[in-house]
Length: 292
Image (cartoon, rainbow, N blue to C red; front, top):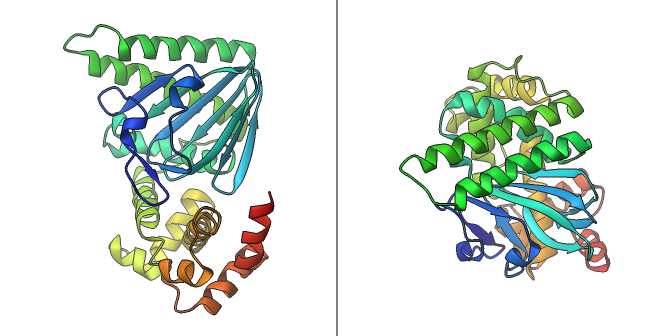
């Protein structure tokens, strides 16, 4: 598990993680050394028990208050955070490798990840907070306490229990229907999103990703639409625009350099693409971002 800054310098030492796959943090003092902005390749869960926490990531901001739970998936860029003096909460950083490599596991995670992207924050009942807190404390004890030969399996089991508890909570808020999705469709969606995250800076055509996944563009588009409610092209565009916004906000690259880095034929084409999808030019977006 690693943390990568915008210029792709590894920062893995900034969060001490058990078996390089999990960290359970109860105090913001433990993460004050994190160099921001930073791109994450892990799942981040934040539970606010008391006070407030403002979390800036990608091109948006979230305000957490008492009993709020927030989940972030790999690929987001953390920009900054600000906690009230009375803030109290729990943080869990977990690599996706802890969930295993089976498609059956990811088939349960994928609908949740799609929801987390657009609806990362929910408000829990006091009973749900107590349950989450109990599981998080148990996870911390098992991850950092005296171990035995089966400690890794115990940690994974507790983390999986916490995941399913959390999935149940998000399901009740956002009507996540894990039972209606077929395993083959899930596998294609998961592989597609992996390919888009890895290649969106250089490839934007559905045909390219269909070729990588050994399916026809028509089949890919239909399957992705059925599985996620968004077309393959919409997913590609969303990742490209996110990457463009991050480069415009967090680097000193010129607009021409951003255009080149994202493999557009020229700055004019990039500008029209960006404005079509965001409603403003790259220059105006950068100007507005610098004032916020």
